[in-house]
Image 1 (cartoon, helix red, strand yellow):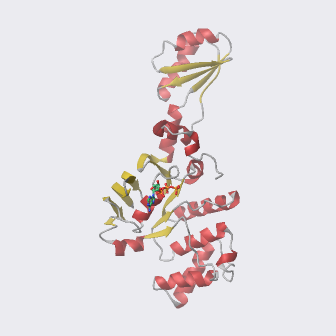
Image 2: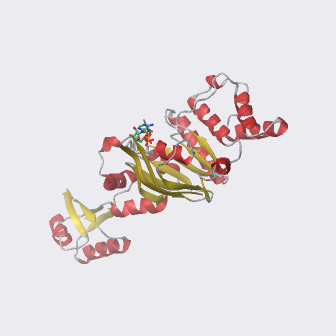
Image 3: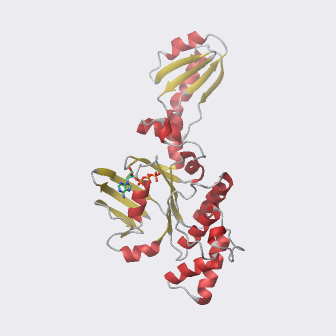
Length: 316
Ligand SMILES: Nc1ncnc2c1ncn2[C@@H]1O[C@H](COP(=O)(O)OP(=O)(O)OP(=O)(O)O)[C@@H](O)[C@H]1O
């Protein structure tokens, strides 16, 4: 649905994008995540045609977004990070205005707007002034507006920033529903855990490049495989340590009371073999498991950043 290759963008001497590659399959809910200043908004502005890249290509629905910008504009809807709503319009006037921008009028426009407002859970708010809506409602209204021409692809730039936790959850549920109905969605955030909960795929951007991307399940599996194994022994901890030192896949050993935490470079089979060997050495094992994995740990591994640079919690 969306394919980006070798995207570069400089602002003066500063390289905001340094060869960004990204591929989003049809039907994906793709999380585009990275710390502040990583280049998310710049990439999104180029995808949506608001900014020109210095180098690289953006293909949307198989068409070059620069060469066929007119046609491609009908393929996507965009929710920017700063929404610039028309505060002094009523909700229905706002929707009606954008419907007319896409050539919809009369009953067709009315029906389309009603359906979209229902879809984003704003039915009944038609007579409210935009100004009087909560932040979460305004973002949902923006989303309805972005869908007025029924695009296949939705691109949202940090849509949940500034929302309270409840509004965030509602918005995430809404995106999942739209994805289930067939939309392809790209949503950016600097909050890793937020995207991990809802996305089918993820691309991690750092310093203007995608440093890791793929299916969420596969990435989490990779993360899991890179986490240490915790072994709880009944007694003879040092006997177990002596044995573990001889195992080639064991990289590090830390003893915490009767627990041994082992950095282990091996897959499931090697893991099962290690357990079998420990038992064969008459070491009493009462617990053996991989420490739970998370995306944060892999982000730290691949980017070597300070913890503070990426917001890890759901709070801003
Ligand atoms: N118009 C511009 N002129 C100069 N520098 C810019 C401009 N737009 C973006 N930048 C710089 O490019 C880098 C990437 O910015 P961008 O807004 O794309 O990052 P981001 O990942 O969206 O960050 P955030 O999460 O804070 O929105 C930043 O260092 C920013 O200061």
